[in-house]
Length: 315
Ligand SMILES: Nc1ncnc2c1ncn2[C@@H]1O[C@H](COP(=O)(O)OP(=O)(O)O)[C@@H](O)[C@H]1O
Ligand SMILES: [Mg+2]
Image (cartoon, rainbow, N blue to C red; front, side):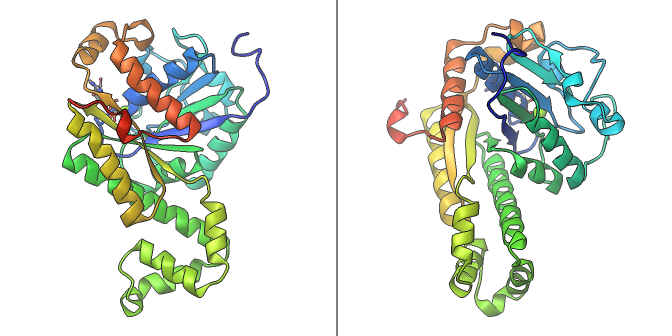
C-alpha cells in the first residue's frame, strides 16, 4: 500500500524547536522523518522555520515551485504543496526561503495551519520550527502533540533550553488557567508576588492550587499529556550523554513540568562532509550508529518513553 491509498487514523503532529540555530533541529527532524517513513508510516515534513527555511536543501530540492507561503497568501490547500522526496512514504512542504524576512505569523494563522495539518492524509506531520523563543514559535510548539526540544551539551545551549521550556510551560499554564476563568487571578498574584512570598512559577501554581479548590483538578486534567521531549545532539562522550538526565531533573524540580529525555545523537564527523557532497539525505548512507540513535529517539517519542540510566554505555 502506498501513501495515498491508506486512509483513516488521525495525524500526530511532532514539533521540533528550542535552542538557537545550529543545534541540529533540521538535522534531527529530517532524520526522524526518514526513520518513521522507513517503518511504513506516511510522513509529511513541513518547514515552518519562517526566516531560515532549509528543509529543501537537505533533500536536494533546488527550486521548489510551491512553498508554504501559497497556503498563507493564496489559500492553496496544503495537499497541493506536497513534494516527493527520494524516500518512499515521505513528502515535504518546503518553506519560503526566497523572502528571508517573511515575518512572523499571528496566532490565528497558526491555528488555521494546524487545523489544515490535522486533515492531511498522513500518520505523522513533523514540523521544523526553527530557533528562537518568540511567542510565535512557542504557540506553534504548544499546538503539537509531541513537543521536542534540541540542545547541544554546552552550557549556553542548555541554559537556552531551560529558558525555552520555562517560557513555553508558563505560556501553556496561562492559556489553561485563562480558559477556565483564572486569567485575572494569575495576573494579580504574579504581579504582586513579593507580597505573596512567591518566587517562581512552581510556587505560583502551588499557591493558586491551595486557594482555589478546582485548579488542581483542572491542571491535572489539562496537563495529563503535557511533556517536553529533550534531545541532546552532537554528544562526544558518556559524560555528555548523561547530562540529559540532569536536564530532565532540573526541569521537573525547578520548572515543575514533565520532561523526558528521549535520547541523544552522537557527533558524526562524516555527516556534514557527506551532506555537502551529496546534498540529499535520501541518497546518503548515514552511519549505523547514527541510525540507531535516531531510532531510539523516535521509538521513545512514539511511546512516550525515555532513556534510562542503565541503557547508557560507559566510556
Ligand atoms: N549529530 C551531528 N553530527 C554532525 N553534524 C551535525 C549533527 N547535527 C547537526 N549537524 C550539522 O550541524 C549544522 C547545523 O544543523 P541544523 O540541523 O541545520 O541546525 P538548526 O536547524 O538547529 O539550525 C549542519 O551543518 C548539520 O549538518
Ligand atoms: Mg534549522
